[in-house]
Image 1 (tube, rainbow, N blue to C red):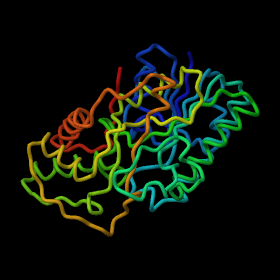
Image 2: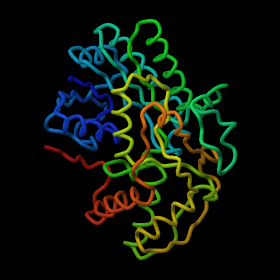
Image 3: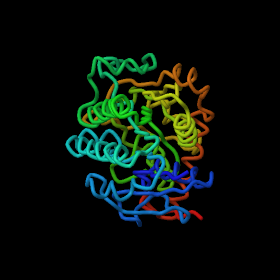
Length: 330
């Protein structure tokens, strides 16, 4: 089949393209970043650097495809999304343009990558909370900027399904991590940031690392291989969502640091900075719906995924590389 993957130069998008190519699909890839800044670039796909906030660009890449997978948005870790709310909200133009093009060119199926940031913040004020169910997004009170963009775009997908019979799929991702993604520069998420800080301390023979907040804030983290497998299984299903794609293994930042210390065999001193952006106090996924609809659950425990991620980041740092390197795949 012919797939368009928007945001293909990003972290999850790059992994999805790799999987689709391995399955012998015809894949068109597009990302706003210049090709030399893509995290993964596949020689077997058609690769374009275009801004999908421009409707004409969307029309050019959507036509002649069967399916569209939209991973494109302006995002990063909590430090980025809390300080760039307007930029994050502009991603609504990408989803809008792509949906209009799907209608125009009779695209069979459309996937939108939403986020756990769409959930009501009032339910996330304690550290260890019950997993968030899909219905918990309403009454609406998502994270400002990024979360509102995701929730609004979810509604647009729903109405294009209802009004134009486009088979739209909406998944809410919960803190996806793994190799071939951002681990420095300000857009990295907490697993990659903690791996980098502890590895850097080990390489340099230092002990102190900065931790945002008191380290007791909690999340559940999903390894990228599990994310890709769940996404494509969901995409091939008759279910439309929204559905959580995440892990139910909830840990605090301090607990995650402890796991990384075990992996790296290196103990650090945590220096807490309470002035940094923290996001919600606690967040975890409830996977009842995806188990019921798709019989899916994660295969990687957090420690297993962090071992793979740490090794990759360590190799990158030992080679004095950074997370802007492009990995070209055959």
